[in-house]
Structures are given as C-alpha cells and as structure tokens.
Image (cartoon, rainbow, N blue to C red; front, top):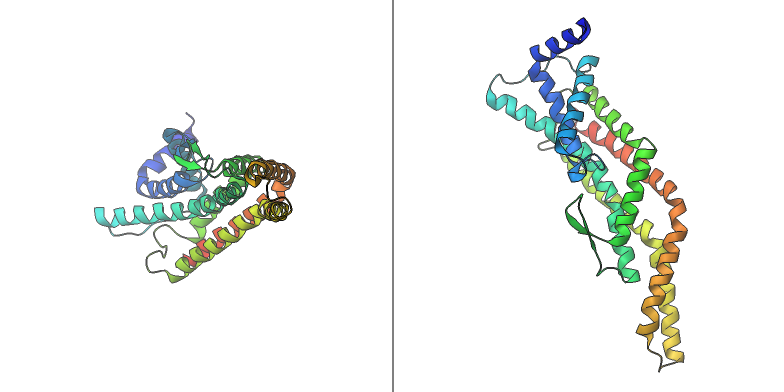
Length: 267
C-alpha cells in the first residue's frame, strides 16, 4: 500500500464516526433502490458498495465536521436520521418504478391475466404478469441509460445540500405534502401506461356487446376471452418500442422529486 492510501485509511479511522454517518446514508439508499436494492443484490455486495461510495464522499471533502450530542443516544439519533434520508431518496425511485406494477395490474385486469400473478423473488411478492414485463424492461433501461449513476450523484449532492445531522424530517409538513403529491403522479403515470390496452379492450367489449345483440345464440365468453387476450398482447407488442420515451418521462419526474425532497429537508 502506498503512502497516500495509508494516509487515507488512517484519516478514516481517526474520524470513523463521520465516515459511519456517510456510510449509513448510502446503506439507506441501497436498501430499497431498484436493481441494487431489495433481495436482488446480495447484502454483502450492497454493504461493500456503500463502503466504497462513503469512502469517495469522505475523501472528496464534501462532509465537514459533524456536530451532535456526545453520547450514545445522540449519535444513534443522527445515525437514524441519516438512514432515513437515504431511505427516502431510494424510496422515491422505488415508488416510481412500481408504476410498472400498477400499470401491469390494470392491463391484466382487462385482458384476463389478473388471476395468473407470478412470484417475484426480488420483492418476495405476487406481481402481475404484464407488470413484471414492464418492470424488467424499465430496469434494463435504468442501467443501460446510466440513470443509476444519476441517482447516486443526487445522493452525493445531498451531502452538500443536507449537512450530516441537519435534516428536517420530523414535523416537516412540506415533506408529507410532497410525498402525497408524488402519489398522485404515481396514479396518473400508471393509468397513462395502461391506457392503450384499457382503451382498446373497451372498444372490443363494446363490439362484443353489439355482436351479442345481433347474434343472441352466440356464446360471447367463448369468443370474447381469447379475443381480448390476443388483442391485449398485440397492443403490448405495439407499445413496447415507445417504452424508452415513457421511461424518460418517468425518470425526469424522479429527478424532479429527488431534488424537491432534498430541498424541503434543508435546514
């Protein structure tokens, strides 16, 4: 090990309390962030990545002296605050990624796949088939476009905008309002993603209704269910090429709310 590396290690161990606070904020992000969070990435890998990122932030000088009550209770309170800050930033990304599951649920209800959910080993939950497809497409676009680096860069920026231990979380009305506003955007984005399939299936239902009136002896369930599945899959196939544009709009929304969240937590 060269002298510079040894000096950095000695400096980190001399200020291990500050380094741990930086580390905990990254742990909060990687706990829930899509692709790198959940059970999709081994715990030791996430901890190792958090250690590396914390070391980069520490050596950059972005975090200066941290002031807290010199006791176990005081230090524990600051650790919890830092973990919550990272968790909130990761939750914004995770929440908007779940738009895919919401849109998939609406889609599956229309085409008849709602009774055939699949088990997702990453989230340990039952997820809709279409939503699972949308989610993995978004994950691929998330990594291929380098958007994960933007999220990590935002957390790097947060150390300058939100000095360690100075965040306003408890009793922050603006933070609650912003989260509720994000829920509205979540609902609108999910409906817009599922709208092509929902609109087309509505037209098919109307056409089947007219057909039943014209031919009362025809069993509409025998004809209608396979027809809606076929039409739904065709529409999904047609809209997959525009997923890049949908992803760009959703990630622009994520960037906007990440900066807004940091702003409302500023002291």
